[in-house]
Image 1 (tube, each protein chain N blue to C red):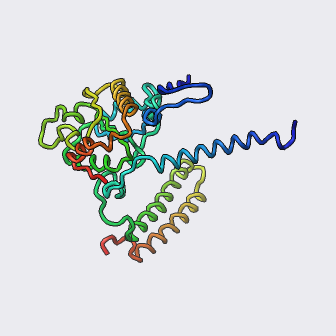
Image 2 (cartoon, each protein chain N blue to C red):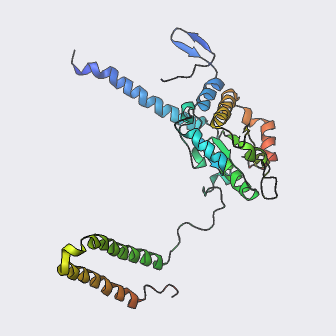
Image 3 (cartoon, chains in turn cyan, green):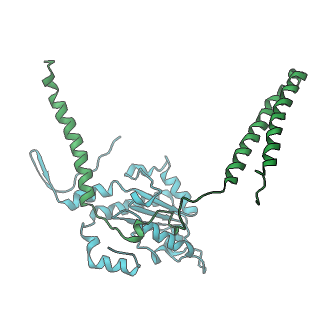
Amino acid sequence: MVKIVNSPEGLEGQGFFATSFDKVIGLARANSLWPLPFATSCCGIEFMATMGPNYDLARFGSERMSFSPRQADLLIVAGTISKKLGPVLKKVYDQMAEPKWVLSVGACASSGGIFDTYSVLQGIDHVIPVDVYVPGCPPRPEQIIEGVLKIQELAKNESLRRRDSAEYKKMLESYNIEQQ
Amino acid sequence: MNNPESYIPILIQIGFSIGFVVLALTLSQILGPKKKTKNKLENFECGIVSDGDARFPVSVKYFLSAILFVLFDVEVIFFYPYAVNFKEMGWEGFAAVLTFVGFFLAGFLYVWKKGALEWEK
């Protein structure tokens, strides 16, 4: 069964429909997120199950996995990120298309998890800004889907000017992310 | 009813659909958010700092050992059907295989003498 998303709020009349750019673009972005999986351990296995036919993330418009950051706008970090991998993760984030979102899957990506040691990054938000955290060790595919739906919610309601705001730029600056 | 003019609506529809695709792609290219920082425009090497040029001369030894491996690999593959049919083929088959191996051995001696197998040189 084909399910089509509902049209956003707007002014409707005979033969025309008017709404704001914010809503239309938000709708398009939210329902066509192209994920870039950055899977390093067991959460990655759960992520594979999420993409598989049983859970099928493609139902939500995330049909196309991207293994190059160039055409990806959702970075899914699933697994333990060691400190040595931190700069790599940051570079992948830097090279993604605009606008981009980050989903941190599992306890390790979100906080270091059980690996409270010198070699493991205690949460990827030390390196890149994260939009949604998915708890669990590892989280079930349903939880990952819930996280992606939360990202869709963010994308849908994001103002087009959000990423130009001084607040956002300051946040990027705090992560040492190059800006134009 | 079947005159060429009746196809004009189809032409208009095709023009409209192509026009919409071109317009949507062009507009998103022009209006979409972009960021061209140094980090972003660098080559994508899975996030790892790229080291050197991708195009550099590779020693011919790699190619030689690869192609020699393929040759002898194929030779060994021919032994399997021979082993299965060993009894039926008799002495005649044995002579044929011996000739085949002989040719290969000659080639092997040739590359050996040529020094193709000396890795350190």
